[in-house]
Structure formats: structure tokens, C-alpha cells
Length: 268
Ligand SMILES: [Zn+2]
Image (cartoon, rainbow, N blue to C red):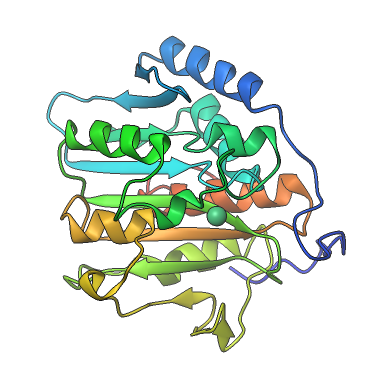
């Protein structure tokens, strides 16, 4: 699909995210209600910050897909995309799904990347210093291993959508197909270097050795613990209108699970 150049950057994000914010409790209430309505199981783990996860079980799953978002409280596109995906509830029939719609509720209340204690949760998966990540990791320990993990984020500085692929076992890549579908709804950052890493057409393939990294993001934790050996971290550009970012994240998820990005039909 060709790049969609009809959407323009807003120019609001000077020094940080200055776009729309969301009332996260309302969104999570809606997600919980909708998930229950569509016969998903909703896990609620009480704690200093309630942890919510939704599961869609199928009789004999062909694959297990894990989706998480809301890790950074200044990235509202992710939880909104989770809500949209649940509202549509279009999934391949054989896919069992696990959805964590907001890993950092206290950060959203402050429109801040970190949690209310100032911890960047996406650097806390090695040492587990935050209650949020501890609750998340305990919950993950009770779930089966996943075939595919999708982590939905936003980047306030980015000129377009991009993604990270972690694929140490060299499974067939989904990256180019995802970028091609997203390009139909949102500009793609095609810079040669993104976030200091070499990139190609919106795709970053970092070579990682978890044991050499003092801090682990969620995606590195999933690989290091063999919880998911193929993962994609999506970064929507948050200096664009929020419907564009949500559409980009939704298209990326749909494509990754084998649905057509914009139309939603199954790819065969
Ligand atoms: Zn993020």
C-alpha cells in the first residue's frame, strides 16, 4: 500500500507529548465491560494499582497471541486501540488472545511516561522494582507461552510510524507486511536511523543479548524468559491526530495476526 500523505503532523509535541489525554479509568471500565460482553475472561488483580488483563480462549488454539499496551502514561493511542480492537472483536478463529490494555494506570492520571513513583516501567522487567511490573510478571507466569507478542506504544518525537522486531529464532518475518498496511493510514518514518538505531523503511531489528542489558523492556523480558520468541513493538507517532495513531496501531495488530490491516478480512 502507498504512503498516506494526507495527514499532517500537528507540531504540538515540543519537548514532550502535548496532545489529547484520556480518562484511563473510563477507558478501562469500557474495555472490561466490552470484553465480558464478548465472552472474554477478565482478570483483575488488586494491588496498589489494579492490574487488568483480558483473555480470549478458543477450544484448540492454532496460535497464542499476546497484546499489551498502556506502558507509558503519555501514550493514549495504545489503550484506545485496545478498546477499538475489542469493539470490533474481529480475530482469526484459531487465535487465542491475551490483552493487557493498560500496564501503567497511574502514569495516565499524570499524562506522564513513568508511573506515579517515577519509574519507567518499560525498563523494570529485569529488576521488578514497581508493583505494576511485579503484578504483570506474576500474571504472565500463570499464562502459557505465546507464539507472538505485540507491544503497542507511541513516540512523541517521531515523524511517522515505525516498529521494532525481535525474532531471534528467525521465524518468518511480519514486519514488511505490517509497515505496508500501516502506510495506508499513517505516515511511516523511513529514516535510516531511528532512536539512534539503524532502521530500514520503518523497521528496526535490534540485535539483543538480554544478559548484557542492565534494564529490560517488556519485549526483552518476553524473549529472555522464552515467553514469546517473536515480538513486535509498534510506535505510533503521537504528534499526529489521535484517530490516525489509533488506526495505525489497529492496522498493525490486525496485519500481525493475519487479518487485512484496513478491511479486517482473513488473509489466506
Ligand atoms: Zn512507550
